[in-house]
Length: 490
Ligand code: UDP
Image 1 (cartoon, rainbow, N blue to C red):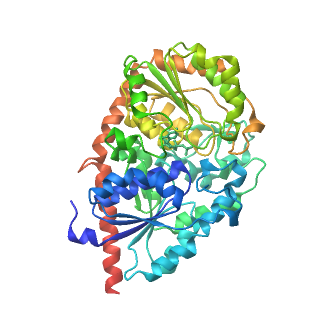
Image 2 (spheres, rainbow, N blue to C red; image 1 turned 180 degrees about the vertical axis):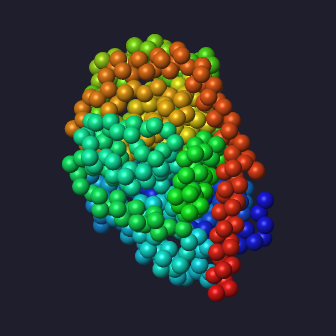
Image 3 (tube, helix red, strand yellow; image 1 turned 60 degrees about the vertical axis):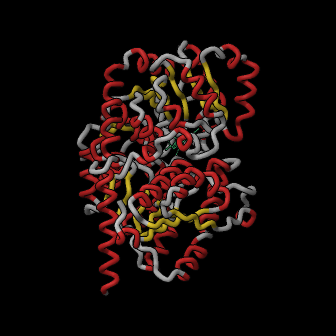
């Protein structure tokens, strides 16, 4: 696949230390290398092992991917030893220190670039890594950003930013996001931090991200055109064509050994997990997982657990409450929940092998917090979803899943629960609400399932040679090669 000229290109990839960003960025690195590009991933010691090991096989097979492992100065930034990722932090109040730790890598990256005989042809960086924009400017390297969101979200943000429609409404008033192909109704209380920061005022950072994004050469999107065509086309128009939908990225892992390694060491043995799933009927299991960084309050998790029990169907529940784990474990133990549901419930404490689980035929529904990676992984598996958005752009994602794609049922959450503010919110969704949504999804699911399966087939086509995402990546590489040629001539 790779021509000599393609081999010549060198991309520097700079991920952000949060699983929902790091995981797909590693996938981008793999895809670029599959297209013949030489890739260097800027990394830190723990993250190299945690996120990088999935690439071992690809590297052994000859793909040109190198990790530039830089030291991470935990102590200097007040971080516990070994904490390089948002979900490792004792709590969210350390997030700022983590970002400062990442910013301290800038100088090391620049020293590395200075020493290179030939500068990288492109920087692919997470849009929250603002310093990467400065570095790109300094060395005049085109920068393609990645923020892990879809085109639907980008357009919602764009239209809200332009119209400011949310400014003149009360928190719980419903309004229509103007200028979109669908009639998308939201409440201000459901909007991401940028438009709804609540008591915390950090619009400064959001504004810096917005400016840095506007200065970037272009944007990678983990989505595929056929999924959200009108939004993808419109976003492209808004960004002067420099948008490349190259997903679904998770589809670059075909075998179970790789799938089980994605994002972290799985807390359950692969065979044990597969045996449990194999023993269930096709489409009978509901899989509940709330992503990597949400820290839902134990009392709220109890409501979810009771609903899973009351639904009387097989389930997998990924239990993760960070520093609040002890409290939920105490409830599980004292309440006898695990014992009572042991014939049909599997609890995974820690990290679930999500790709492996979702792609098993026993899975009939996915209760998700609406993180975009999770949703797209659900779509790839052809699994309809119960949507329980929590923070950031997750209420947009719910609209996309439930209203636009019509492959989901909402639990009816009303407000964003900002990261680190979970305690303030307490219980917002009751057990009956979860139960109702799960039952509707599992009992009346044929239409939704049919659509989800159709989308999963389109997703697979998009990443094949000649498919839209495959072609988009090829075009981006072509585009960067042209940039390089122009630079070489001038
Ligand atoms: N994930 C996983 N196992 C877990 C939790 C999360 O593999 O137990 C992966 C999931 O497959 C997805 C990512 O972590 O790729 C989470 O990203 P998402 O955008 O869904 O949510 P976030 O964690 O950013 O809120």
